[in-house]
Length: 206
Image (cartoon, rainbow, N blue to C red):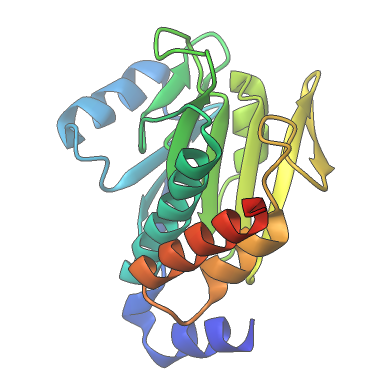
């Protein structure tokens, strides 16, 4: 956590920047998305008339990519189907909520024809911002994993709100401590993936 704070304090360009617009109608939110186009930058979150526009830092982007590569390598090693759809814009006009995860996935037999992904990953690199869990709960995403201050927390949807859980219910075989350590390690992304694969293969060796 100290290293994370040092990096962010060393250069203001390495933080996520947010702008908020208030009393934004759903139609205006849709117009903002259309004008921005399909590259998902800047990222937009909509919650009951409030629009958050966020430009993510390079550290944020590298961290979320590292995390995604590790999760996808884990699923391949374990033989589990994981269908990634990146920062897909998830929204629901009736709920007045919209969000763009760092990464999101369908798990197992759930296919992309479903309305909502099963799992969303969120990196909180710079504190503040709209309550993403409130947005995800309204949209019905089954699990949200959040990285903040060198820790990964997992949240499972219970009715209309999330409950923090020790291990994923979608991917119960996944060791969150191992993934957290590799996300936070100083190694390159490729080396972290190789370490993960070697660890998993060693654990299955006779």
